Each structure stands twice: as C-alpha cells, then as structure tokens.
Length: 168
Image 1: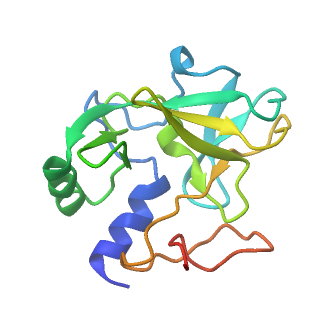
Image 2: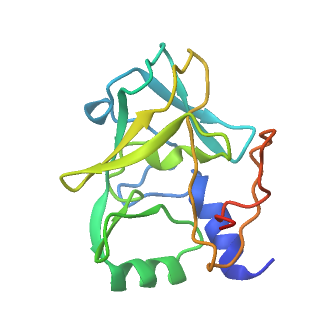
C-alpha cells in the first residue's frame, strides 16, 4: 500500500493523535450533538462514535466541526500529516476536524452506513438514515472519489464493496 493510501486510511477514522489543543484521547463535544454519544475503541478502525440513546431516523445526530481551511491548505495538510480529518465543505473550503472537532471526525466508514452527511448553510450535519439503537456505532459512507487512490475498506458489512472509494 502506498504512503498516501496509508495516510488516508489511518487519518480517515483514527484517533490516537495529539490535536492542536494537546488532547490525545477522542472526545465528543456535546455542544454539537443532538443525542448522547461517546467515543471508544472500534472493531472497524481505532476509535468510533457510539449512541448512548436511541436516535430516530431523519434526526440530526452531530455537526462536523473544525477549522475552516482553503483547498490549498487542505492539500498541504493532507500531504504533510500522517493522520488527518479533512471533510470537503465545497469547491474551496474544507473542515479540518483535528482542530476544534466535535467528535464527528471519529465516525468510521461503512458500506452500510446508518448516518449520512448533509451540508446546510455551510454546516456539515450528520443525519440518522434509520433508527440507531443504544450501543450502536455510528457509521457513514466516506464516498472517496473513484479516481483517488484506492483505500481498502474494513467495515465488514454484507454489501462491503472492498474499498472506501466509490466504484462508479
């Protein structure tokens, strides 16, 4: 596996890196959640985010927050850092969840997700696709572009496509 693919895989859902504020353990900022959530180790990859109460379908779960950075800075951070949490907001801006993140940056990829992202007025909201039960890990399809370097998937879903990248 190439170095950049490892960076994407490690950074996409990892959590044992020091953040700008010095923390090394993942945390959930309840100011950006609509339900009680916790971060803990995941079978999929390093840390995950888990529901502590039932979350109804169609409801906002958490907002993806962090530092708003330009596409140029996004590329620089993606190339320089071993681990990163970069979410594209639009054609110019990205959100770096490793700086001021809400905890949404620890939500792992799955080919059978239970949340999806919706961008509303420059805010990235994670919405429940279906009812999520207490103790269930929150999962989202990262939908990496098919023309990006292929990143293997470890979600274990029955319909796993084998990669975090889109196939079509």
